[in-house]
Amino acid sequence: PYPRRSGTRSAGPALVSFKYDSLYWPGMTASESREKWTLRRCPRGVAAALLCCLGLRWASALVTERLAIFPPHYYTDAALNHHRALDIAAAWSSGSRFIPYTGLSERVYAATAAVLYAVFGSRPLVPKLLNGLAATAAAYLWYRLALLWIAPRAALLTLWMLAAWPSNIFFSSQNLKEAHVLLLSAGALYAFLSPWARGPALGSALLLALGFYRSPFMILTAVSLAPAAASALFSIRPEKSSARNATLTALCLLLPLFLFRPATSYVLTHILAHDPD
Image (cartoon, rainbow, N blue to C red; front, side, top):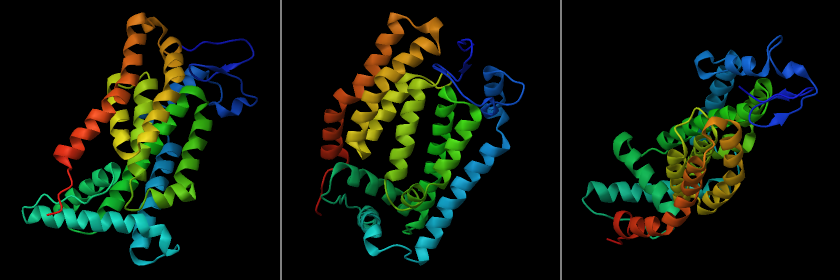
């Protein structure tokens, strides 16, 4: 199912040469090796990496609840998010529609955390644990994306690097929006590029949601996706590489860029409008 060329190993939609065949399972072709690493046959290495990823982030969340292991300025944004969410949750419980006067992404994240506080209590540990879970899901999506272009064992090394990267562990385990950004960006890329995903319509929705947290990331992701999506469209699924599908993919990439301004305007004026009372 993948293109092959003499003297090369095919690692997905593009032909990639590897010096060492040990990156593949011994005695298997690239396609057979990739089949062994599917979700239904999740290898122990992937499961171990995901457990490590989640465990490190939850451990960081629990430790930082009790100990300030870094200088105070590392926790400034998390403390602001916590107090904004507390104010919103308290206002909602009293029947008010109070929303602090902040930027779009701060309002969206604070409102999300306020919902969690209203359900589980006003402890920042709950959003921190959920952020760790979101970061683990994002790491798995990056692993699945890596399988499209590189050998399975190299993709597994990528997953381990994401799981154990120190700055990723810390910032995705705090009361911050970084974990949301990681998951939305990885989800958008996976939806556009993976032959197993639901397609560009889902990717378009995830791109728009990404803009609510980090609008520059939405633009950069859409721009970087354009050549990658074209490559995936004509290489991974050549039988579907019609003008209709190419047009649909282009429209789904452009749609969030055109909808972002009216969508954010509606959210800021109707759903999360600043109410000082």
